[in-house]
Image 1 (cartoon, one colour):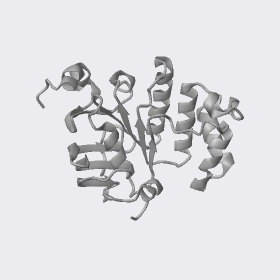
Image 2 (image 1 turned 90 degrees about the vertical axis):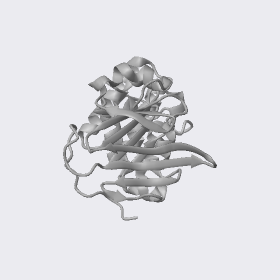
Image 3 (image 1 turned 120 degrees about the vertical axis):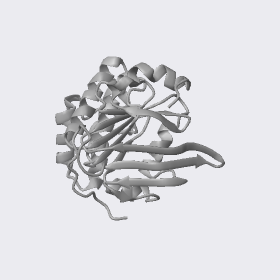
Image 4 (image 1 turned 45 degrees about the horizontal axis):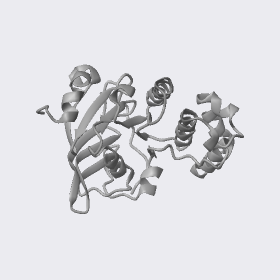
Length: 252
């Protein structure tokens, strides 16, 4: 796969050329059980798109397809307009796709500084990685020599975000960022996510609890039983329809 993206000038209102990330009729299955039934979804540079839905809707599977860790059974995965369906996860990562999985994914027995040191494989020097991390999350600088596993859940999530930013992502995938965190902490984290998007990153956020992300999302898509049943701006009725959509009483 050819890595990198073509020039992208899309804005937060969705104008501009091809989206950085697009799912075109994506289907995915586990053995004989189909989980995604033809999902269409787009995320442009500078946008935050929230992928919402109840447990078992297929949200995490969608992220797995995008990151290359689960194959698509049908459909196309496009990055910057290029068809990368079936690409190796390492190639997708080199092309700028960064997944921060549910559960944060930090190394609890390493210090904050050593967690960041491991990201030098990206080619960035340690000093630059630490500058990015500590300027965006000053608390990490204060905790630099502390074991990551002894920090609060919110601080660990900040470290996970900082590690992801060290890869200079074009597409940032976040899976249940709010899980197990206090609302005030979640609000602060999503403010940072919005700022990351403003720098031109395409951000796709999977969340079960919609209220956590809708205030900063440019668009939202609701996935129910493997199908996108509603998408649009969060204020275009989606907030008020979520209960009915999750219960399946809405007819798309």
